[in-house]
Image (cartoon, rainbow, N blue to C red):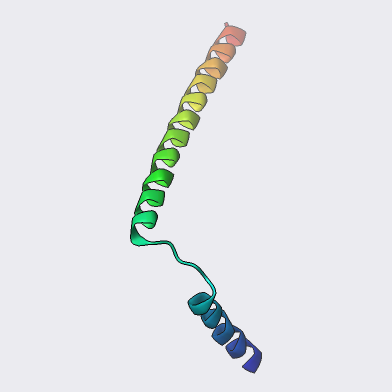
Length: 65
């Protein structure tokens, strides 16, 4: 149990002293960037899924006559 407590103390020390944290402005701009790319990729995946869905539906309608 003492090993776990020591690990947690060292982890907090590492985060406090050795990690370089971004500024508030950097955090905001990076958050917006991630949100924009997430929306773009989700729309792309939605579009591809829609096209494949229609292709598969057309294929099975063609096979079943």
